[in-house]
Image (cartoon, rainbow, N blue to C red; front, side, top):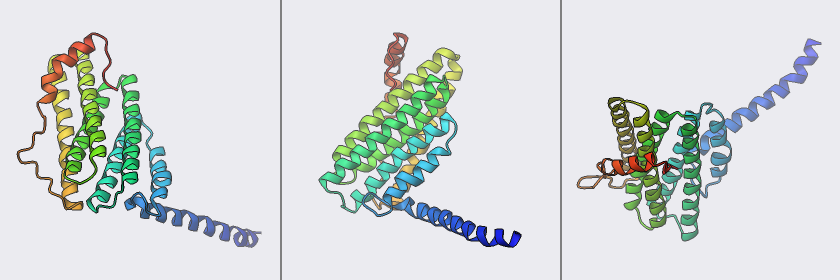
Length: 239
């Protein structure tokens, strides 16, 4: 009986393992694929969906969706750097990014609804840093003005969302604690922005030097009283 079981099950097991290993290999190979590549559907419809299923907590889900928004932009930047985008492809690139940005904002809204304000603000700050970095990178590439405009718009929304959440934290915490949170969020934003700039300089071979560039670091501070007033008035401007 054991011999029969072995003869029957061994081929089934081998076939199953081969499928898993082959599928895993294809999934891994798809990670660097770009829109238009043969493996790109595997990347977005299989590999990324499997990875999303592994994100259990609300924070992990939000972080993953914001990361995917950055991925969509990295793909566009790589194609634009090689001048491989026609008008239809640029429109599709913008559509893919906007759709993913909406998903990211939805997950951040879930964190806010669960009153995980500090986490929501942290994810928003990192998302803001990513978008600001991509905004500057896209400005250095040709013929992606509409994508760049969409990114700039989403960066402004992310900034407003972060400020809105920080104002809610300020109401719930003492002034010193709220200021500590705000500084940590700025650190998150700046670190993400720097990381993406460095990666772009290495992969895209484009000049990402920011000397003399206005980074709008003071903008949130300048508009914070206005945002606070609107929040106290009961107007949700976050998402």
